[in-house]
Amino acid sequence: MSSFEDRLWQDLVRLHGQELAAGSRIRQRRPSLAAAAVFAVAVAGVAAVGLGTGVLGGTPAYAVTQHPDGTVTVSLKEIAAADRTNADLRQRGIPIRVLPFTAECGNTKMYTEDKSAPETERGDSHGADGVTLDTSTVPAGDYAVITAMTDEHGEVILLMTGGRPAKGEVASCLRGDMASMGMYRAPAWPTPTR
Image (tube, rainbow, N blue to C red; front, side, top):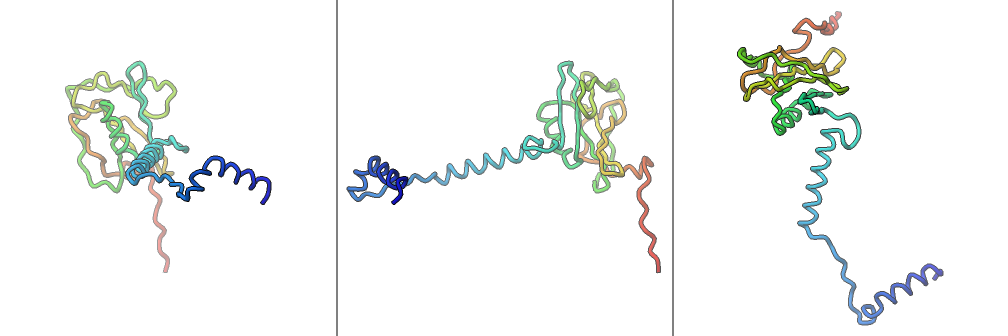
């Protein structure tokens, strides 16, 4: 044996010599199944939050920033993150909803505007990307609406929809695209040649 192995053996005998001499086995501690399950759920939860918000690296899919003056900035990098954005807004009690405008949506009914409410004002973004709104004039039960759509390059565009808030809940999406609104020309399909 090498001098390292000799020292290792001497340390083992010194620390566990009595147990070895008695012929008893040194028990290995194994984590319980319940502890392993709790650990797995915790890791999955942290990964889901990290991926959704960009904490684990990369660009966050969305951000909701509340400013000291009461304004709120909403930014969205992926249309698919609108549901998570709305859930975050709902959880925080912020009267803003993001309305994705996509060709895949089955809903064609627009929300009802609250004509009795004052127009929602845009606020100072404090340097944050996205749309900043002052929600102090939005009546309880109403929502300022931000429409999210993609341009011809796939970039997300956020627009403040109208000036007055929606009366009551807002649908999770609205069918349409920028080409149908005349905001850009959709690419033409190639003409088949025979």
